[in-house]
Amino acid sequence: MDARRFNLRRWFVTGFLLLLVAAAYGIGYRETEINPVKLITSLGKSQAILNDLLHPDLFTHQTHDTTLDIVFPVPCGSAQPTQLPDNQAHIFANVACANPGDTVSVSGTGMQPDTDVKIQWLLPNGNALFSKLARTDAHGNFTAQVQVRPINTTTGGIPSHLQALTAVPFGGLLPSQALKDVINNIIVTVFIALLATTAGTIIAAPISFLAARNIMGHSRLGTSIYVIVRSILNITRSYDSLVLATVFALWVGFGAFAGVLALTVITMASLGKLFSEAVESIDPGPLEAVSATGARPIQVVVFSVVPQIIPDFISYIIYHWDINVRISTILGFVGGGGIGFYLSQRINVLEYQKAGTAIWAIVLVVWAMDFFSAEVRKRYT
Image 1 (tube, one colour):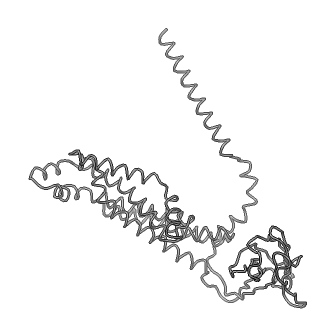
Image 2 (tube, one colour; image 1 turned 180 degrees about the vertical axis):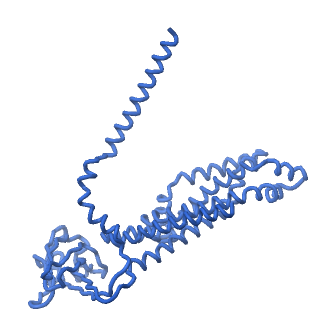
Image 3 (tube, helix red, strand yellow; image 1 turned 90 degrees about the horizontal axis):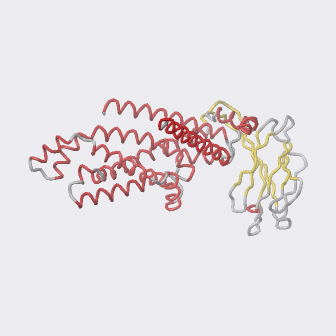
C-alpha cells in the first residue's frame, strides 16, 4: 500500500512538472512571437539581400562618376527651384517643392541605360543623406519614390538638393574600395582584441592571486581581501560587453578606443576569475615545501605557485584573444570601432554587397584566429 501511494505521488509530481514545462514553452512561444509561416513567406523578400551577402564586393572597374542635381526647397517658398534643361541628362521631381513628411516622385532621363542610381539628399549643412537605390531602364530613364524629412528643411537660406549618382564602369579589374576598407577595419579589430587582451591580462594577473583562497585564506585580513576581490570580479563579469561598449562610447566617443576599454574590462574580469581558479587548483606540495623553509609570502608565490600556473595562464590568454576578436566585431555595432562598425554602417545604408565583404572577412579572421590559438596552445601549454 505504501509503495502504491509512493508511485502515485511520483506520477503526480512528474505530471505536474511536465505541465509546468509545457506551460513555460507555451508562454515563451507566445511572448517571443515565433511565426514559422512568416519565416517561409518572407523568404522571397529577403532573397535579394541574401544574394548580395553571398556575392561580396571584392573587385571593381574604374568608373566614370556622374552626379545630377536639382535644388528642392523644403518647405515651398523657402528657395528657388532648379530650372530644368531641355535636351540633356537630368533629374526632376513631380513637384517643384514639398513639406516635411511628403512623398515625392523623382525621375531621371537621358542617363546611361541599365545602370544603378543612388538617390540622396544634399543637406544644407553639406552632408549627404542616402535615400534610395534605383536602376535605369534600357532607355536610360528611372523613377523612384523618396520621402521628404524634417532635416531637409532650408536652413539659413540654403536649400536641400536632390541628387542622382551613377558610376559607369570601364577598364580592368581593381580591388574595390569596400575590400580596402574591410582590410583596414579588420586589422583594427584584431589590434583592438590584442591591446584589450594585453591590458586585461596585466590587470588580471596580480588580481588573481588576491582572489585565490589558498593564497589569501590564511588570515582574517586575507580572507576579507579575497571576498572583496571575488565580488568585484563577479560584479564586473555580470555586465555584458555591449553595455560597457555603449557606456565607453558615450564617455570617450565612438571609435576603437571605446572598444578597447570595454574589452579590457571584460577581459580583466574573465581572466581574473580563470587565473584565480588556476591558482586554487595548484599542487599544495611545493607550496608547503617552500613555506617550510621560512620563505616570505612573495617568495612562496614566485617559486612554488608561478611555475605551476604559467601553462594555464598562457592557454587562457591566447584563448581569450581569440574570443575578443569575435566579441570586438559585435562591439562595432554600438560604436566600438573596427569591422563591426563598418558592417553596421553598410547595413544601415542598404549596401549589402559591401556588408557581405565584411561578413566573409570576419569569418576568415575568426577561422584563422581559432587555428592559430589552437596551434599555440598545442605547442606551448
